[in-house]
Image 1 (cartoon, one colour):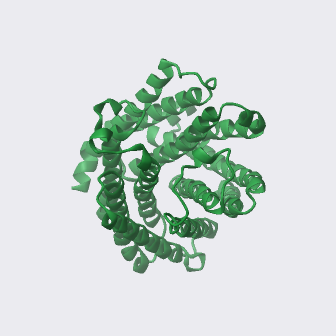
Image 2 (image 1 turned 90 degrees about the vertical axis):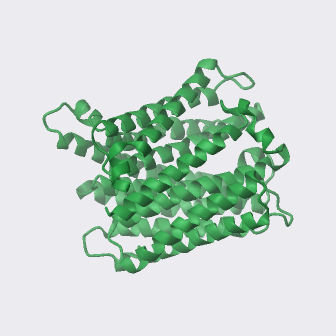
Image 3 (image 1 turned 45 degrees about the horizontal axis):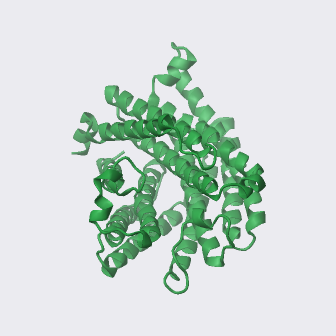
Length: 432
């Protein structure tokens, strides 16, 4: 990995962490609400939905940029494209975040909104170059053409999904109002709302496909595992992307097809996780399997999350899906809480895998690697586990204080590990 890529990865991680720190006091329910920063900025309830929409984009685009940097670093790539992609995606995420958050929270006016749109446009341009450069027919003859097809397909589906979101967003203010998906769970949804719901769900799913492919590349997936897992990932992507887009026209049937695609992708993820764990054990022949796995919390953490997602996302989601009629007859607020928690756990788990992948790729070693790895792994596991008790509490009841404390403690430990990574000795020296 070149020093420029190391710098880009470190900076985009620091940028995202800075945004999280700055925005935390603005949460309506977080531990820093008492600071009253939202009131001082004059943030009213009327604009809350629009602010959240801008916030999601301002945080997700830097994460997408980090994935692009990793793809360019992991895969053989034509330099003609990579030299243009990195500047475009870097400017894209910075302008998106600065413009979007300035417009939403600082009342910077419509020029800031224009800056936000320029950032998204640059990001889309970089994505188009990435997709073209990933073309399987341009790939080197290294015996990994299936992998190339998987990356190319993921990039293509992401571009199509972005077009759906952008085309729908163009009608905001012209008879189409901003909304949150969790607020229309039990209402009749129009085409624009269904398009946005499809957009936000498939974008997160495709981010997870990109992460899965990067982890597979990192652990050197090969042999029989490669020949089985890659078709699963390709087929799962082919199923889940069009099925999610079809929510716009055949919503009820689409969700059943989406579940099939998700199951196929999860099977591929399980193969990648088990292959990677077996590799960790083989790299340390003098230790017991458990000690070999736990000796590297960074590598083990990213592989563990590929399996842990089934406990904190898949199984709870399946339970609600099978009991949807009963759920729909109960408290609406409870269903909304579950929908919000379910989505945020998956998004945050994706961020955990992404961070551990960056830490591993930047070759953090020694005590710092142990501190960051165990901090991220322990903090996220505690928080994700506690959130299940929060989501599945009896409708209308206040969550136990111990649950809230566990969630806050887990998030706090994760953030401390993130801070340790950003200021930790060796990485800072290499970046400088």
